[in-house]
Amino acid sequence: MTRLKLAIQKSGRLSEDSLALLERSGLKFARSKDKLFWYGETLPIDLLLVRDDDIPRLLLAGVCQLGIVGGNVAQEKVLSEKASPDLQPLLRLGFGRCRLMLAAPEGGPIRGVNDLEGKRIATSYPALTQQYLENAGVRSDVVFLNGAVEIAPSMGSADAIVDLVSTGTTLRANHLEVIDEVLSSEAGLYRCPNPLSSEAERLIQTLLTRIEGVQQAQEAKYVMMHAPKAKLSEITALLPGAETPTVLSLEGNDDRVALHAMCTEQVFWEHLEELKKAGASAILVLPVEKMLA
Ligand code: PRT
Ligand code: ZN
Image (cartoon, rainbow, N blue to C red):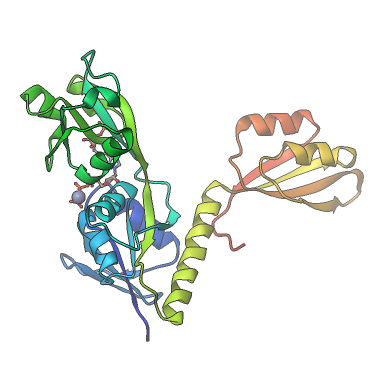
């Protein structure tokens, strides 16, 4: 029987969210402490727990058929290995968001990419940085550093850096400011580029459909209320991302009905207040656990 291997980060910023997403999608694993391999108990999909930097290579080599990794790591690997075909995310996962930024000393002479001509730029992303510079037609000296990139300018070993930023605290602490964005990134579900058996493809499709269902359910709310019959269209229009609602009659009440609707966008207090103003009452907002479109 076909079994797939899915690589996730063993311990780091993406680990918890990756595992939580898979578990919410109905995957359960027989965990083996310390080991890198967890057996899939509910679907024939096993987990490989590795360093995030290894995931693109495992996918390109076909050792793993699936992987969850940041776009920054996937694109850097594809560029540096000139991999063809490259890696494209099957799904963006909405966590691990960050931006690869060009940053330079606060108030210094570097104000834009064109000021980088002949300068030294420290980064852990040399291929993405090189591509960014080439696109801008600028020639600079790209210095590879495996960590602590943000201290390179104050140490005098670089004039600017290209590094990941999420809150910007690290940059500020090192008296650096953002000059330009090189890449915007989030975690994605990736697959190996080579074709697989039809059984494997079906399994991937099952996983995709489930993850999409989890993603939709995260935002979705089931909203119930009583509403005046005469105001149904006005009230439906106030519901965020609602499709045709279900309307049920209320025993012994000819003027009002029960209205149920699935809202696919976030429902805020403001929405409820508007609904009440329009004549709705007994408004209930319920979380949605699973969805299968
Ligand atoms: O051990 P392993 O190799 O698996 O892990 P790692 O140390 O290489 O990666 P890890 O766990 O730090 O990050 C994994 C992935 O998370 C990255 O490849 C990105 O896709 C994503 N991610 C999201 C981030 C950040 N946000 C982030 N802020 N990765 C790193 N950072 C760094 C940033 O470079 C800065 O130095 O965190 C520091 C704090 O950022 P600020 O801006 O909030 O101060
Ligand atoms: Zn890493």
